[in-house]
Image (tube, rainbow, N blue to C red; front, side, top):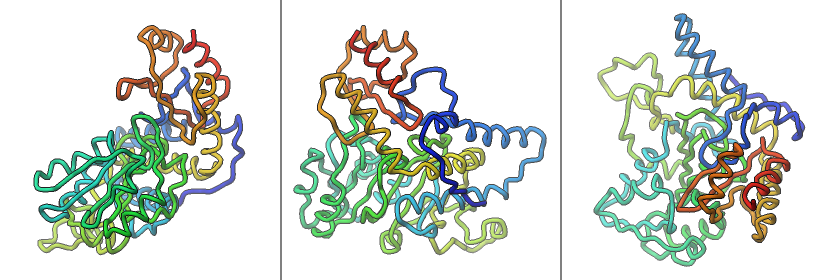
Length: 352
């Protein structure tokens, strides 16, 4: 299976791919499922009901997603492993470090990036403000781990500065692009490892995640959950008594959630057909329209975090406007299915 790349105009026709019954401003929580994704998932489950489902055929969907995600971030498909969640993939990096290794993360970083390192009681983990991250890297640091876009408030990492500073100090870099891939350019960041989920801005079902890395960085990891799908030829080695792991990033694979990966294919197809730069311009323009209406300066993120009274939150709910509360503030996130009318109505409700 390959993912088609037919150009598509970024206009009302794009929004026809979705069927919202509310104003959905929570892509940072999970993406609005495209109709094509829902259809793929439903078809797979119906085939399981009738007994016609072909689990072997899922492999081609997984490969197509591996290729597409690799293209988004600038890695080869052979350097991309698949999982179901980010934290176990970050855990591979955390478990690869020797006792006493030093790790640096931003303050307020999402726990799936931070906790796998903290769970290693013998590691030295320190946090610094996001904007000071590049200047805070020291010789002797082993890993710098950070999200390209922060979950709580949408702050955007200065990726070139951080990666250059870390590498200059001898540290490897782990970037989580879960809040960036699908709207923000994350190709050729220079990171040693990249992780992401697929159910947010990449619009896939819950149950897909990626780990990519340079050959040298992947060679430092151990396949802690080595199972049958990590085999070089999974369908013929399932009963082999000796270890026959794949020699590329597939050695870190876990068995795929079938319907999730079948649904991720049309999701990535949609994102690729529109183009990341087109989506970025659209998302940031809408978010800046929202920020301006709230009296905030313009920014470079598709996410905005604002203080909101309980009364304002009640009005949003009554008006069918979906956001999220994160770090005690209202978080709103604009994606390709949102319109200027969505933003204007949200402002009317918020300002009251």
